[in-house]
Image (cartoon, rainbow, N blue to C red; front, side, top):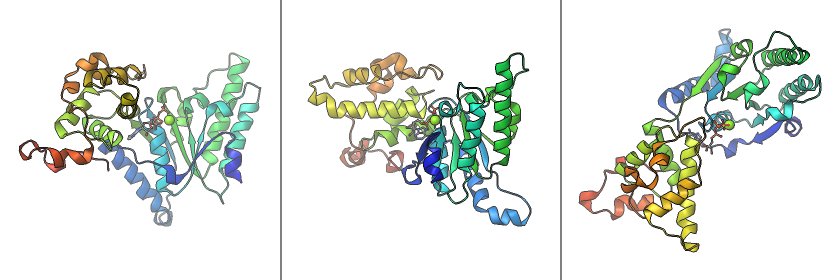
Length: 309
Ligand SMILES: Nc1ncnc2c1ncn2[C@@H]1O[C@H](COP(=O)(O)OP(=O)(O)OP(=O)(O)O)[C@@H](O)[C@H]1O
Ligand SMILES: [Mg+2]
C-alpha cells in the first residue's frame, strides 16, 4: 500500500491519535474557516472555485505546528504522513530531486488519501541562488522540482518551518494559507498548564500567577514542566527526595532546558524563589479536590477553576 511505501520518507500519524491543541482565538478562527471551506468543497465547485489545500505553518520550536497539522488531518478523517527532510535529501547528485518526485507520487494515490506534512520545510525549499557553483545549480533544480510537484499535487499539503524567511518566494506563493503560530498568551498558558497538570489542578489565582511566570514559554515547554512535576510527585517519595515546594520545583526546573531560540521564561530565572512558586498550594491538589475541600469562604467560583477539557 502506498501509505506503507511513503513511510520510507516519514512517519504516519493516525487520526485517532490526534490531540486538540489549545490555540489563540485568531488561529482557531482561521482554522475553523479553512475546515468549513474544505467541507463545502462541492458547493464551492458549483460556483467554480476550489477549496484551498496548501498551508504553511510558521513558528518557533514547540508552538504546536505538528500537533495542529495532525489535529487538522484528524478533523478531515485522514492520516497524516510527516515527511522528514533528512530522508528526502541525499548527498548523491540528482537523487534528492528523484526522492521528491517519488514522495509526491506515493502521496498522490487517490484510493488512499493522506495529508502530506512536510516538516522543516526550509531545509527542502531554501531560496534559489544564482548558479555560481555546480552545487547551486543542483539545488535550484531541486527547488524547481519541488515547485512543480507542489503545484500539481491534488491532495492536502501542510509545510512547517521555524524559518519562514528562508523559504524560496516562488514556493511560498504556491501556498494559499500562511499561518504564523505565536507563543501562547496568558489565557492559553493557563489552559495549557491546566491540561498537562491534570489530574492535579490549581485554584484560579495560583494558575494565573504560574502562567504569568511562564511568559515566553512554548506549549512544549509548559508540557515538559507539568509532566516533570508529576513525575516528581510520584517518584520523589519513592526515592526519598526532599518533597518540599522549593526542593521539588528546583529539581524539576534543573532537568528542563528552554530552547535557546525561545528565551528563558521568568520561572527559570528566579527558580524556586519566584513569587508564583510561593503562591502554589502544596502539595498540589487533585483538580477534583479544589472546590470540594476548600472552606466556603476561600472557595473559588467553579468557573474560575480551569480543568482539563
Ligand atoms: N497549542 C498547544 N496546545 C496544547 N499542547 C501543545 C500545543 N502546542 C504544542 N503542544 C504540545 O507540545 C509538544 C510539541 O508540540 P509540536 O511538536 O506540535 O510543536 P512544533 O511546533 O511542531 O515543534 P518543532 O518546531 O520542534 O517541530 C507536543 O507534545 C504537544 O502536545
Ligand atoms: Mg514539529
